[in-house]
Image 1: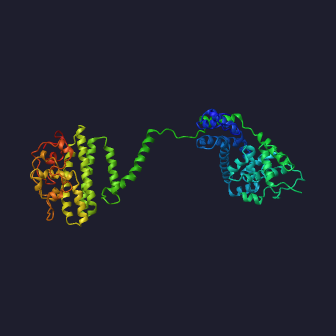
Image 2 (image 1 turned 135 degrees about the vertical axis):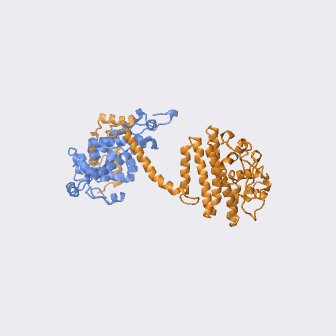
Image 3 (image 1 turned 60 degrees about the vertical axis):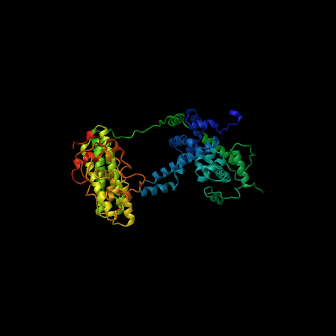
Length: 221
Length: 347
């Protein structure tokens, strides 16, 4: 897209321009709608895969988007960086949600809590949410991944972010993100029965237990 | 059997996920398939259009669904009065003890700033009415005078210079307020009389202070003398009275000599020199020595309060003497020079 003066106008992966960003900062309805249309589906997928509850995912999507639009005047990056910024907000909202959910989960009496913990194996709310997705074989397999692998895959596949964007968002190196997504997908493939038995183990990290962190992953943390 | 380096596999998988062309090797094929299944699964998660509309509405118009919470209705008249009383009571509980505690505070004491603050609040509360303001400012001038007397009594000499200045300033403010009330057509003769009494008593106190200062260490003495010499209202008025009967240069007392001089002697009635305001001063130099701060002008012509020049009434036959504590009403017209004659009480 050419702008005034023949300069190449930056366009994000989702087709937004710098003009859209500037207009959205002024809360122009058309620009806000364009940004919502561009990112809301990805945000919803990200939340849905994370919490496995449609209503909660919808609420989280709306809340994150409202926060984003209200905070948009403070966004100083180029339009290409908008996605990463939005998912940063989404990630924070998700953490808040999980914290509240965890808090409400520990409210019962101690004996009830012990029972509940024993029944669930002391797993986190995200894991419990994924349990409810019995109909989704793939998403159910996602819960077997480590939290880092799961988050990387969700940001890459649901959020549509690139490895460098995910790396910046998570404060990791791009190499670490690539490693996490490789291991996550390898584990997923194995759990889904997609890996042929004759395929070699993942050298030089031969652990087949996806939940157990490799030495490299421990370093990455 | 050789395997590709892990980093190469990672890069190839990353390129595959980004949609860049990559040769699909046996190692990558199941991973790509898993990624496709995940992508398909995620693509099936669609946002309800109605929900999307609601979100947009919320962003654009801030009309998110609001849960009505029970709210307290408008306060009734009784409720409002009850709240006002509660607030007044709370304020009284806080302010009253502090006011009482600070009432007797003297300069240099911890509660004194609070006392001054309360005075300012009181002034602010009566500024809508010039007569009330004049009365309040006169009361404050009386308070300053009492403080000065108390400081002398307690021999708190270090605080006296500031107290002298405060007294002079308070009398000046009070006189201005009385003049303002007169200009507004709301004369306050009773206040003017009281202010005159304060002025005269202040003059006497200053004379006593100056006499006492002679026996003090040099630093304190000089500070007190400087403070007395810098007064603009209290002392000049005293000099005005004394100078009415005798030439200013003949004034023997340190107080009158220390005065910056009042220039309105020509409009003052002839009066007897004060005898009570002249403390013994064996070492006190004559008047010209104490007028050194203004060496270019003789004492009788240096400066005079501007209001005095404009409004000092003609000589009054009743004004006499500087005898403090007696005949305040009779001397009032001569001392509150800024009050127009028509507003002053009849001599």
